[in-house]
View 1 (cartoon, rainbow, N blue to C red):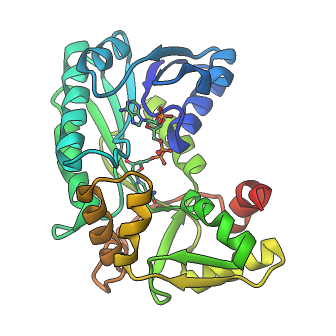
View 2: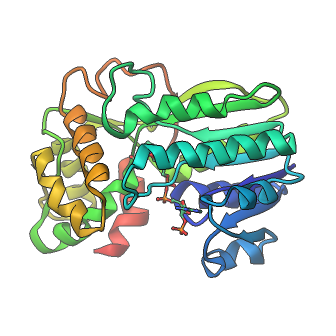
Length: 291
Ligand SMILES: NC(=O)c1ccc[n+]([C@@H]2O[C@H](COP(=O)([O-])OP(=O)(O)OC[C@H]3O[C@@H](n4cnc5c(N)ncnc54)[C@H](OP(=O)(O)O)[C@@H]3O)[C@@H](O)[C@H]2O)c1
């Protein structure tokens, strides 16, 4: 099949493109910096260069495609983040319709099932709606909490033996590897029968912060501690990354939700497909080399 992949330099998109190439599909990747996808191009991917903010680019990049892998990229600098995300989704929807793309896989998130979600999560059902188009088989993947989020802790693990995360020690996170998400997405997009609707996706473990620290302690051979920051502490951190005040507000709301018993990851979670990679396997593969 001919598949166009958005976000192909990112965690999930790169895994999707890799899995599609390995399965023999024709892959076109949408990128802003082609140097980042040289390895994919060497394996046969076509790179088209442009920005998802450019509706014409998205339309051109999906011309002739039977399938589209789509995600809403983080855009922390936007003064109105949700309006920016709506605009990007509208570009995808227009391109899908203009080109008659028959299959779409959209990355959403667990939490989209909750009517009262706050922060970024309340946007996921809106984007799902925008991409559910007549005549197109759209599957919305709702994954749990990415193990890759932990890679940002490599410095403090190395220097202080601590993970600083704004999630209280009593709250469990449904961990998942983005490589597993990418592999699942590639298979679903190219399955003999086109899939529609929603699939929740969670890895083999749902762990609290102290359980995560214990697992990483085993892998690293160091006694690690999970330090729960208050969500309000994220303001300065994200300001340092150039986030707008709007993005900071959405992040704080999101993390406040993680710290509620009826929050995004409140148990029981919706029924989910379970993916294989354990936290220990992920840590050995991706975290240890950073330490
Ligand atoms: N983190 C979590 O725990 C979690 C949980 C559930 C769902 N999610 C969702 O998962 C998605 C993130 O997936 P990910 O980790 O694979 O993302 P990622 O690694 O941050 O990658 C983002 C990709 O989008 C591209 N991109 C950003 N802005 C762009 C623009 N204006 N035009 C073209 N390309 C652009 C980036 O390209 P460049 O290389 O050019 O920057 C990169 O390829 C988000 O929708 C998030 O809400 C996250």
